[in-house]
Image 1 (cartoon, rainbow, N blue to C red):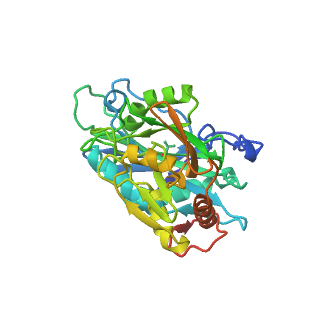
Image 2 (spheres, rainbow, N blue to C red; image 1 turned 60 degrees about the vertical axis):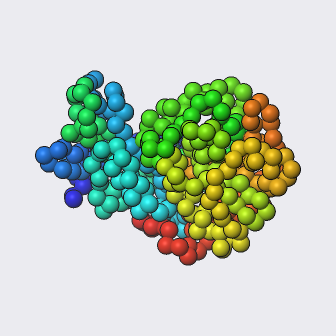
Image 3 (tube, protein in one colour; image 1 turned 90 degrees about the horizontal axis):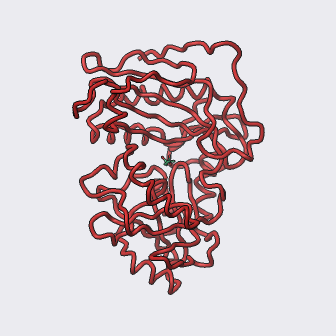
Length: 357
Ligand code: COI
């Protein structure tokens, strides 16, 4: 499908950040966005790159009432030689359509997803920061815009992509975060929507996250919604626990998001010399193993969070230090390798990099 490019009104704006090292996550947006529409009798139509700006939405439209919404997150990196690269964007295209199927939304052709993002990022390339740890975060989103209060799948959708120059997701940067195990609220249940990227999962997580923040924790580690016993995910991250060179993580049983970075950690195991095991992680056993020192490292993975070391875990008001509370050697190796590939410092033996300029 041809993507029409509309001019920016007046002078092109300059990137609104002056100090790349002070960039945080998710507050600054570039000049343009990609828009495509879908209607039940037309399919996808009118792909266009337009000036970034607010939508006019009917107050009755479905997304505002029943949360029919899905999104993705990926990044563009500027290499020191000027190359612009995306990291595994095909995985995001696939997951978007997995989410679409669960949320009764139309699937988007992968070529349109990839081509649209590529054209948009190329046009906005001067917004991509180049300092270590910075990148251009890409947020593809689909919303239901039919103005109708009956509960049913919408017959009209917007797919749009916005861009955001970012630094680290956590203010601490690549430093250990403190996480609270949530045993009151749950994020997702089997058969629900926990395994798809839909806004409602994140809305459901706010209450627990707010209480955790008040107690000084960056995020909440969710337990399974049935037994409140098995470790699931953090919300912005999948979780891993290292027992020496054996790394365990929860299996994807329907309530956990299948992270692109999670998958990349699996694929790096052989290269970096660790073993990976997907198994149910009983929180009581995990705490005992942290206390006895069997758990040597804990880290989270995510597009926004990359690899984030977890230094402390609190459960039932008791704080537990993982290893020495610092950044473990495996965590650092994973971070260095993954970001090395993303920023073109290390050769990509996996075919993960898609150079776009
Ligand atoms: C991402 O890592 O891209 C995510 O979608 C997490 C988000 C909640 C910031």
